[in-house]
Image (cartoon, rainbow, N blue to C red; front, side, top):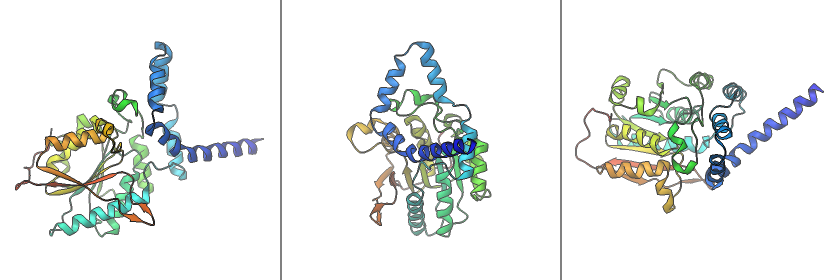
Length: 303
């Protein structure tokens, strides 16, 4: 009987791992999330509050996440092979454009369990930039409260919660080099300021990963990076909502459009989705952002 229960449990786990990605795509890329959230909002106060609390923090989630990571069963939210290749190309391009060899630091906003950080860690070693510094910024408490009211309900507060000890343990197990990797916990509005950049000695951004999903977080991350784009930087958006007109009002795309409008000395050129074996290297959106002014910004970072 115990063996039978164990077998059923294993089957359910494998089914959940296989179905996670298509179900997530169905939820975020269609109107399903809007209909469900609208139905929840029409419920009486008691049931609505209970559901919202459960959505924000499911009991045992961190323990389960830690176990899945240890056993290699957690489904990555980014295509690792494609993203790593995109990072390699970005680093090689930046190195070829800067005669000093200073490509800048890697800044990642929205770490979750660290998959993208690991991709950049491997990519930097592969192109001979093993001293490249990696910075990962995350609340390690999931998405902020603003997720409840932004981007038409595509996301929710507490989503993508991966606590700091779980992430650090996972990255250590995967061989991250802590002599050049720094995790910065905290809400972006509290941490992304001049003092932080000065304390961490971040002076130039080379590759920037925006993977914080919602508009306000993406905008805070971009504003922090603005003075750190000295000459050029490659900016990667993981959750680009598309190129249809209505997508301009959503998430990372809205944040980037406003960011460029507020920084006229910066221009953005979309990088082509190069093909290998018939598929794009990365499904997100990649831009080369170039400073067109004669002078680089001073050593101040946006407060």
